[in-house]
Image 1: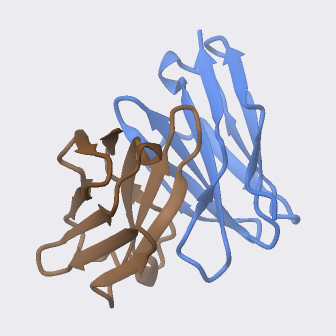
Image 2: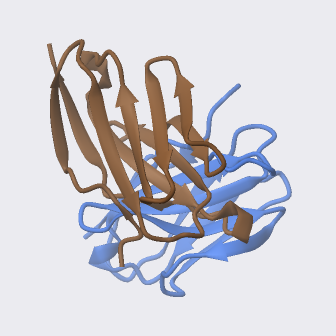
Length: 112
Length: 114
């Protein structure tokens, strides 16, 4: 079974731009979560979607948003990029009744 | 306020010996705990998990112990192999409380010396 896939793997943007990252979960997984990893803050939860609805949201500004489609694929968007948004963005998926999340390889975003 | 803490940033162990990685938590709502292994520029790989109704879970060379009264868990790797060298993250969730987010520790870098 294919794992979680994320595109693109690497991205360079400039301050003020916006970016959209994509995540395809493992087949059959309907829950998708997003995390940000930075050297200073570690892995931090952004939000979680299930059946196209946001169930949980972390402590990030409104510039960070996401959505989930009917096929469980998910996207996250960051608007008005700041230098501090440079990070590894990770997507994870899980079965509806499972606590275990499986991660994709991540998208490395660099904001210049 | 760090709810999941891994107080050892790094650990070095000889090949063949036991590696013990520790994790402490403060939120009593956490009821599910996981360990992930991570290489640079890759996503975390799930290793092993434990529910709060258990105090031990074993999977091959990996064993996780949970001490709820002390709010402490540990991951034992026996025997340690050079391929185990990576950063290990402890994570917790409060699934029973309806939270589906994982709260991570800062990680422990394990180096297994041949």
